[in-house]
Length: 265
Image (tube, rainbow, N blue to C red; front, side):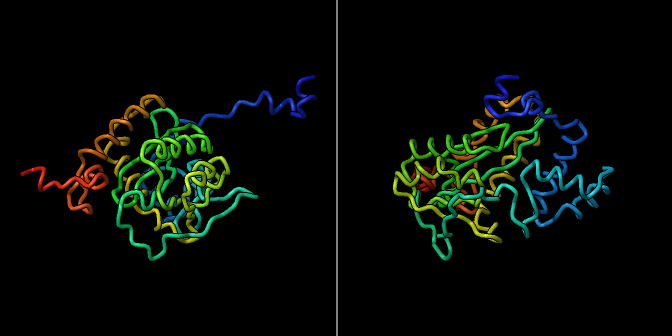
């Protein structure tokens, strides 16, 4: 009681334990995630109708509530992960009409929802827009700025600094602690404006690949299992998985400038 008084904290909030999502909601969230990946323009009302066709007894409001928990919204409205915090600085968008022609010219980062067998998590990844190479990633059970900061600091330590770093306007990316290491390296900050969801299309394609090629095929139980699985997948994605848009070269080959024809000869 005395500790609560000194800290100015309500006793009820001190003892509050957050409710875990029910098994039914976790199943529903997995279905929402799949539909959103396939049809990102659909809002809660249309998603609810599509879910009913799949046998779910669910209304628009409950779908909307789960979408907020997952951090997703239809693309005609701003994604929940893109809501800036009050007082955070917003940077101008710098990639308009810019041709990405070399590695480390522009990086991007984004967050996505990850379904697990029991519960869910969030994934943040930093990618090089020229090569599509995943430079760093982190997984967290909370949508906070800390795991985003860890990812960007790892990318900077391993690969140097980009000329431009692009994100949405989410509070995780407008946090001063996230921006500070980038500005210390002289990186120019760029942030998507309202309606510019297409600017992170390469990251959205990455989410589709990692989910359909790995996460949806397995029922990972713990964060540790998810992290180990993503480490394996991103090694495969960077070093072995050919990309059609890269002329069937891998992101590593494109990033490091490996001439596949010469290597084969």
